[in-house]
Amino acid sequence: MKRFIMELWLCGVLVIAYHFLQAQPARNIIDVTEYGILPHSSQNITPIIRKILKENTHAFTLQFPPGRYDFWPSHLEEKLFQAAVAFDLTRKTDVTIDGGGASFVFHGRMMPFKIEQAQNIQLKNFNIDWDRPFISQGRVVGVNDKWVDMEIDPKFYPYEITGDSIFFIGEGWRSPITKNYNNLYDPIKKEIVYQTRDNPLGALSGAKVSALGNNIVRFYFKPVYKPAVGTFVAMYHGAYITDGILLLNTKDTYLENIDIFHTLSCGVSGYRSENIHLKGVNILANETKGRVFSTLADATHFNGCKGLITIDGTTISGAGDDFTNVHGMYAPVTDVLDDTSVLVAPNGRYIGFDAGEVAWIVDTLDMQRKMEYRVKSQEPIKKGEQLIGYKITFELPHHFKIKKGNLLENKDRNPDVFIRNCHILKKNRARGALITTAGKVVIEHNYFNTAGAAILIEGDTDLWFESGATSDVLIRNNVFENCYTSGNNIVDAPWGWGEGVISITPSFRPKDNQQPYHRNIRIEQNVFKHFDYAILYARSVDGLTFTNNCLQHTHNYQPFYRKTNLFLDGCKNVQVSGNTFDASFLGKNITIWHMDKKDVSLTDQVMDIRLLKAN
Image: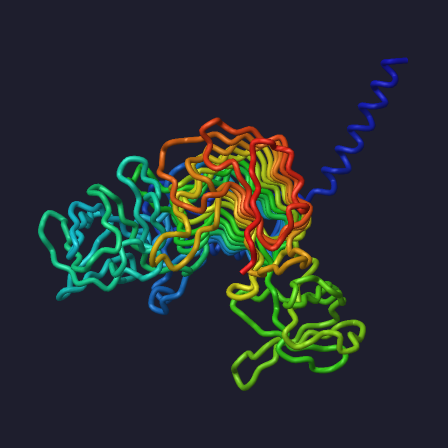
């Protein structure tokens, strides 16, 4: 009887497996060597890759033997000064690119991968780099009030001095030092220097120069910050040029076992895409080449996506901006056209609405989602050649309940986000995870050692218009070690890097007894190894818990910021309990503002709470 049951079960499994395999498309295996592509040949394989992808549209695997492969733009693309795409997977389905451990080396202005209007794309087992990156690196060998001397290796970072100006030479480009980031890294750990942020030297980009010999260049200006001899300087030659792996309006993308050493903007960028999965995708400074930097912009960035975003087992170092940023976009209503239509303002990152998607109506007075309407259509409106906005037409009349100045938010484009087993290091500019989405968020089992805030939860109504008031965020079982070493008290730093290790700072400023912007954020069972006071800054949260965390005092850096552990502004239903502190941990206190003590359930007897009176 048992044998019969086992045979019956086995038959069932085989039937299911048969039908599953029958449902899968027949996959063509393409070996690139059959097209004359050979590793370590120094040949430009871009034209051949384009030919292969033009001949194949779906259900194939492109396989590479291990080794180095070089990609160059065409002469026309270089002449037009535009970014060339190496792997264009537009409108492909069921495609795998398997690098087999290959090194893909790019030259000039190139986008390695573009995945647009595609489905079920897998990239795996390769690394991405440039021989000549769009960042140059120097090392400080002398400094005073009048000049900074830097050693710059012309072999890796070619440059020329014309008159009293310096220009860096790339493959098809020539550039001065741009004014954006230009960060400092300490000589030993190669981490962002304590209490420095963007452009800490000051007027480096416009400084006059002279050559002193032996690869030493003197920059004549008064530095705002005097770095120690040996400090590394990362000097940028652009910002958002083109992404490394770009996902546009695509579904079900899988990236696995990929090292990204350099790209000309974000490492991985997703726009209006659904279901994105990163496993073992590392954005790293290429230490074998002595570099302290990796990408020009964010390691990863996801705008207007939906479904599920997972980031698992990633290590980040040297990126030119945050580890990840997940958000939607508010669309400001500039005119109410009629009872069913409104005009919204365009911007460079506008995500808009597909027919059938739902728009939340947000009142800027209190930033609450007041109503929702299903969208019937979206139409660009132009004045001559200039785009002035988008006409959004709803399926049902809104009876003029929508007002000029309201914001529209796409309800359907709020993905669930799971971030696990990642290492986010102080070798990375700015902050760690920036998450604003109404979907389910789980951040667990990660190690954060960031220069700015480890986790930043925003909601921006006055600059970038990044949307996504949260409703379900769980931050648990992470280690936060000596984060937030570059804080907001730095003089002349143009951008803030947060208000604490965990920073919840929507641009909406609450008044007494107003309904908060964010909801349901739980910070549980984490270890905070910290040298300073500022652990959590939380503005406008309803349902905030800080429970069962372990706070350990470190002595690696000097304290410098606000002398309170938890700063709560306009929050409700706050629970603080079960936390443990080293005896020497600084502060052991809570400050509240725009709220009452009854809004906080405090059972940690070691902690004091004080009320900050409103201005």
